[in-house]
Length: 362
Image 1 (cartoon, one colour):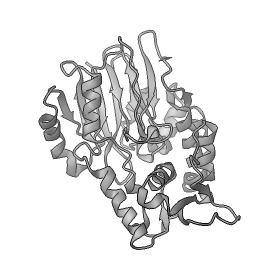
Image 2 (cartoon, helix red, strand yellow; image 1 turned 180 degrees about the vertical axis):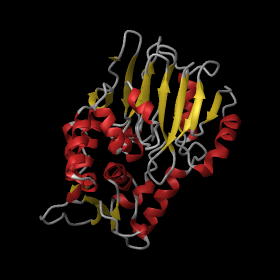
Image 3 (cartoon, one colour; image 1 turned 120 degrees about the horizontal axis):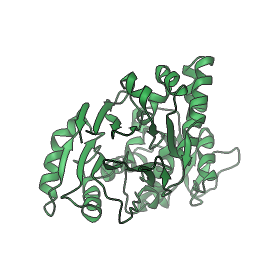
Image 4 (cartoon, one colour; image 1 turned 135 degrees about the vertical axis):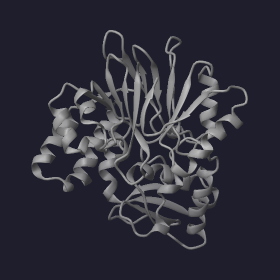
């Protein structure tokens, strides 16, 4: 009997972000962000799929007990090409200071073993199994994983987003006619919330116009999304341009390598010693935290709303056959998720389970 084990993340958010799937013939990890995975499971893993470079989805790869096991196993690790490069760069630019030289060498070796994959490409694993990656819209290079197993066909969304006015924040799913889905493991972060994408930005816009804020803290993967919101806002675009701190150069260079243009208009600039253009005020975005009032990470809620997720379900899947397993949810929203599904999807009654930590027979 196929079994799915769900684990909570190793960071403070305590969300379920790691799934170990035993499909009888192979043992598969969908993301690897927990430090509580049973050692016997780590020893027997055949494949690890990493959806994106956020720490709650891959930090288990830095847990030295797991590192030693994986370096001595035949487990294959897969991610998109962009995600692979970002994971390596994040380790080199910020995380390696937490490790001794011996551990750094081992982690580097493990990261170098990650196999980069193109989106939409069919990658054969065994005679009966394969997988494909699809863009999830959550970060640049982030992916959904379609796993065509011998017993079940699974779509793991990872963290997924859909912003109607931003093509870089839109999932793209292109399943073939014979690629059915038995289970969707879904991003539940905001499945009980429809307004989160607009409300937060309104607060930032007011802090700029009414309070005169001009310096903001933002994580690398969100700076371009934040900048797009600034220059697309009628109240801000005529008065401001955005300047990225030079600390982001390593991140921007990876995006350029894969033909993502960070500087989509002349209103987005990289910090330089040269004089800035006149006529408009500069909004500086840095990777160094100043205070909570200028933290703009929350304004780009890089997750899908229930409305957009429901549209994907109704358009793409057969509610009589596809079961939905919801993970990655906030504890306070858990009780609302089931109600939202059953009250909103009037045309199709999907079988929905909100995952708890532990085992579930599939």
